[in-house]
Length: 329
Ligand code: ASP
Image 1 (cartoon, rainbow, N blue to C red):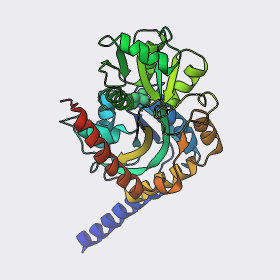
Image 2 (cartoon, protein in one colour):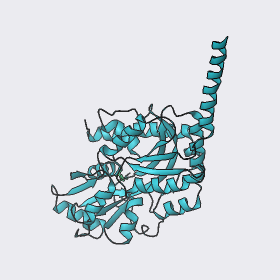
Image 3 (cartoon, rainbow, N blue to C red):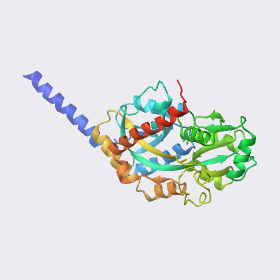
Image 4 (spheres, protein in one colour):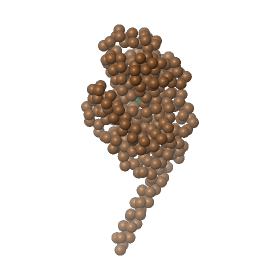
């Protein structure tokens, strides 16, 4: 009898504890960490830091920090979150890499589709083709002349195998039928720093990283990767690669938020609700739009839509990557 009583008490205590942790998420004094799988100061980091600020209020004033766990085209940071405690306090903010790494890495230590809770798409960010300041070319036509004169001797920086810049670089080389030497970094911040220092020749990167440098004339800008020209003041005069003759050239980088698989449903809902509020924050919208980013529509912030979208992207980019024949072990 006593044992039964104890058991009943124990069971209700467990239920209460689980219920409380979901209801009180985030608990007072607990820090939420957003893992960014690239270096600090780059475009993914920029989105994460803006978002962390916008998420604070809807998450009851919680402290939200960004942890840059960079390397291997985002797979090291993503693996860290896949293995983290599924309690909502460790999140991943990743970009299109979530859809390219399953095809690029033969041995990925996690499964993109099965090891995460999907919390919603955040935004879409166009890319720009930029060059080092000493490049003797000021427009795309002059760039192609320079490329043709320097074949076999051109360095194209990227943020690692599976990164957005890697993908854009692959597409560009295939579109102009010219191979370049890939120079991988752990993020676009060191890549653009070396570009500005004339250590590498070219980089294709998100406008969230390149807009300020283009405006300050610290890099040469040649084109955007969207089908239409952008309206962002600093970028609106840049032609699209399509209008420059690269038929169907189109790549836009989306970002999404993830939690480890097994995070309680109520915590996932709290995080998803907070994300929806954050994406309507006027300061967040203003900061992102000034850098050419487009905030995701309400529908795409739904976890099921997010997952469906990533699955479609895995199939889409898997075909491109297979055709390019690029792999890492
Ligand atoms: N934009 C980079 C890329 O090429 C990554 C970063 O955010 O640093 O994927």
